[in-house]
Length: 280
Length: 320
Image (tube, rainbow over all chains, first blue to last red; front, side, top):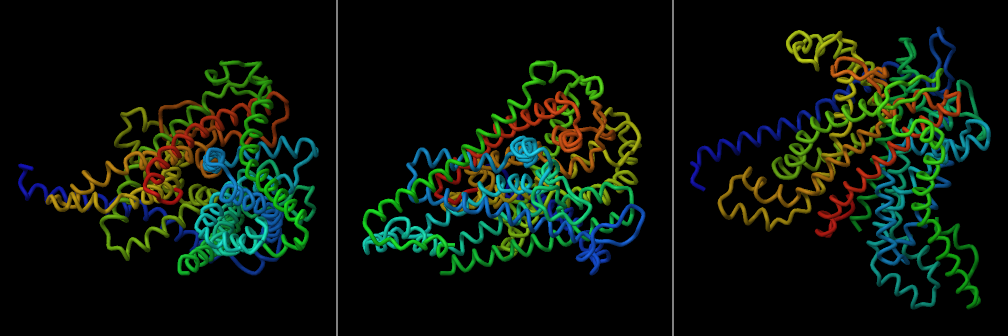
């Protein structure tokens, strides 16, 4: 280290400044997006938005009530499929799995959660839409479930592994069978952490659009039949944002605000659960 | 959840054994569902794209003739658009993300970092359709009125900045992808940097290193492969990103050096044409694009995960 202290200090400040600039460059566009959603969304959202379905082209007003209902139904269906599979799969990894098989499944889950969500839509299309001869909310739910499973599996497993072995052993020593021990002792002690993963998975699929494009397809009206095309909030935001009507753009902003508020709500709740877990 | 699962009281010993067997069987099947889904994806996508693979062979990758009426399908413009948009986005996003990750973990006060880190993670969770909405209604008009005329006027001698300012363009796709992958790379790099043992830093500081020298000599070399993994994971996201890109790239299947002109990507053409594809061959061609996309992202993600695991696992850290 023969260079002068002055030069080294100068370089230190320069690099620190550049990293500060990088952080600002990261935060500013994101702040702008947030600002616009708030500004445009707040001025567009009203009671009609939550109670009406979209008006035909050219008429003002209307809302996205059918999209919100459709999203709720499909997320509910996807959770019914995805949560048990993810949670029970995680139990296998944490409680039974041999190390090699578990590592392979863990790795596949991580890789699977990185595949483009539009691919799950295409797979659900070939598996359900083609045989059933029509777009359906059911196919959309299956596509969403395929996205949920790896997320729930990984987060649940991490939480189960945090439960001390002595708890399991105490229960088993009392003569409680393994399955009952796992469900009533291990899973229950990890419950708040598991809830975090579940909420994060729900938040993730709540905003998914691509997997629904050719499964649920979307619907201009109240569609409540799971075997028929169904509206979804993200799908409506997409089609309204690219339409050339000012009034539809307003609805899209309102939809974006609702979606962001729901997702942030879910994330904050998830963080709350996560915090109580570590605070124990 | 546990209460609904335990309705049958395990009274007899033989029933207990059955209960455990059934339980183990069910959990095994569900765990293996991951592998089944992965295999199913590959099998379905391959078998559905067979008609296009048989008809066009390797020409599918080198031809840019995409004509649903004539039944000619070449995917080159989509491959080109995907590669250029995601690589450029990654080149812009990676230095910013690493800088931000270092700033959050090493430089700024702990309390500030504790606020920025969850914020960045929250932003990584914003749905892509919302980025697309902002991109098409706010960013693209701004590019059209301000940035593109500036670039065309002052850098128009370069082939990358020639043409008319459309707003929706390759440039818009690069920017929106950059904004979207930055939170992902930042939050994973941050997790990687957190696993650097403090003894590494303390050793450098004890030798009299400045803050930057500590980062350069002790922290970055330790987290190198993990950060590389984070960047590759960002690349995977960018390649597979569908909605936001579809909304801002202009959806025009042309190969142009100019970032000002509209382009098209692999996920975008699937999103736009798949539901309306009429002929079997058209569907198969889109399936083949999906298959290429799937294979590329599988390789990218596998590589990224291996790199990230190599750092976080050995340090005993959590999953990244």
